[in-house]
Image 1 (tube, rainbow, N blue to C red):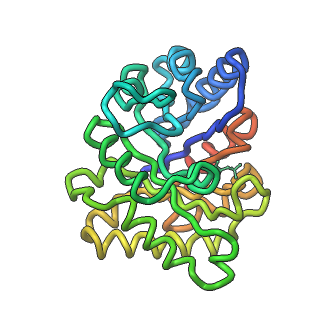
Image 2: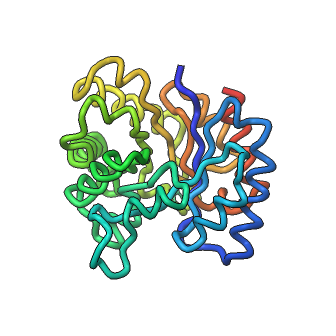
Length: 254
Ligand code: PEP
């Protein structure tokens, strides 16, 4: 039985005051559900410490939206993994489509970050997903295979337990256009088969695969009811406790 995991990606939004207020609302709203659902929020780097303080012992964990793989040193503008653990991060989101397609991150770079994060004791939320033109060309599964093989290269059987996969079709992120429950289930089942072939049946059975792409309270129940959908990575709807908490509640009900 996989424990559902709902994470909020706040992207490049918020002020210090609004981040604190949002964290307070999530911590309060998630309280009845943290016994059955893992919940995380991912604020921008500059608000991580303040948000961590607000989350306190609520059971809601902290995720960073990115990291650099190198040890602390002369890498102007980058953030080391040690800094993330230092401020209380439990997770780091890697390979998000905006980093792949806006910032030009490759599978190779993402893999270096994944391996470094796992070595430093952070859990990884590895995002994968196809572009609309790739889906229309029937390449969805090939793209997922390539991103999984690239992102998880040299990640051992012993390390994969700290990886959560997020299936995020790029055409559904921030567009209001959600994958149908059938489309999501089909991609998730494919990813689980990939894990079975690359690792083993046990890894495939226990690894959580989140769905991400315009998840909101109105579609969460149906998406989360799919047998291979183990939670959600939520962007827009995670920016208000009133829309994020019902998604957590939907996950608790599965
Ligand atoms: C995301 O940023 O990972 C995401 C899924 O965004 P949205 O929920 O807004 O589509």
